[in-house]
Image (cartoon, rainbow, N blue to C red; front, top):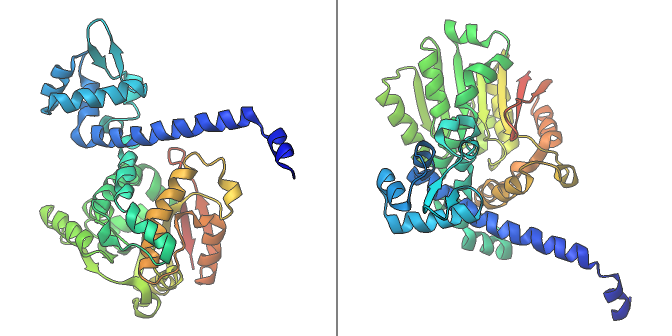
Length: 363
């Protein structure tokens, strides 16, 4: 096609619309950094409790430096998060906005997830090298990752563990109350397991994770709560299909953990091996399709692909693993579960959870 025809076919309206979209993305990326700071400093929580206040008053209430608070407020106002009165110089966070941005919002608090943007940005140079040379970025390069993940799971899992998640498995509460053996594979910092240990003292819980840092956090929390029925072990799960105890557990769980393993099939075969014949495997994983084009309408599709590229996929590749990625999707999840030997796979969705599928799996 000639240069003249190329120019003739150029859609100016489309170009302008896309340019505006990218400018919005730039502003929204910056906003995520500011939301993360607002969450971590407690500024958003403080603002939600204050009447219209000056930057000095807000800073004093939050015990923070006024100059930084004032500049942060500039970002919040221009983003439409915080309202400003030019006559009084006062600021307020509308309660309708606080409903999505404060700790009081519990599972609705999106500010928690904004922390991932800065966290992932911290490994951008390492990821850039992987684009050029292959390989991956190991877990230890991600500062605060387990801390943020623990807070994330505290919202998405702990808040609905009793009300929505356990009821997905008929009769499991009664079994846990009576006393069964439970294994959590890829347990992270162990908040979920420690919660279960508190709720069901007659059952025994074991958590496995590759990260020594995460395991130590789980142990410390269990010790602080004087939990005698919860144990944690640091373990590389790459060979789990060969080392897992045979039919040792009544319930096995994975919470957003399979897709970033080096060898996810080995992990799933190990779970199949370790699960009793009448036991249940509860698997939380990302709600998505295995086909990219089917995820165009996903409400947080871009975010999840980014987290996958800059964490889930790369930490697996850093171990010489498969690099499955967070967006492996339901189709591939079912394929892997079937190949691992499972015969009954039920997919559940929770109305309040736009991010995850909940699979109830049987041998």
